Length: 178
Picture 1: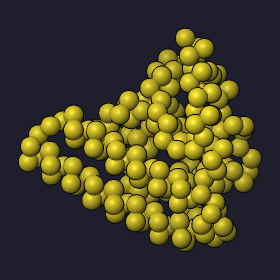
Picture 2 (picture 1 turned 90 degrees about the horizontal axis):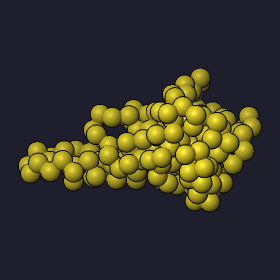
Picture 3 (picture 1 turned 180 degrees about the vertical axis):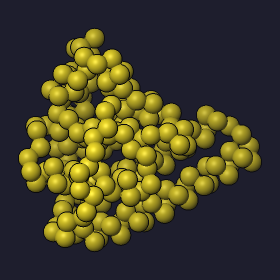
Picture 4 (picture 1 turned 90 degrees about the vertical axis):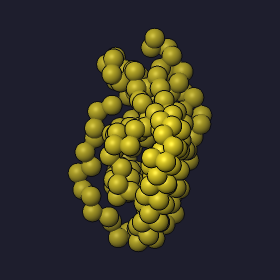
């Protein structure tokens, strides 16, 4: 996936999604704290009794929960889909690895949707995640899949939140490119 820089990290004062920006910020703080506690518990358990497979699985699940909570706290549209890709999609998330995600859109985002997406991506950075992200439609994914690194990441896609139907359309599109 190619990184997409979010040009403006400032939070708008206006309502975004179901929560005001302030309420979503509080929710993000809670999620960040919970994620930190879960990461520390996993690390401590690993240090006490090393089991790398369990550690990676628990770390991945903790990040899954944090992303889902952030998705719902921001009130993201259920017409979109939040997808884990690459190694993270495979369920292998090392402690200092990038968290590679795809926000899948049914159609290209308009100005209002782009603003909401930018704030959501900022929320994820605020959780303390090293994020690799893309925001695309299924057609854009199909076009980008000509790049071997993109198709490889998409082959390991895993649904996290939002529209399962859109996720299945992505899976079909990826399979058709092989």
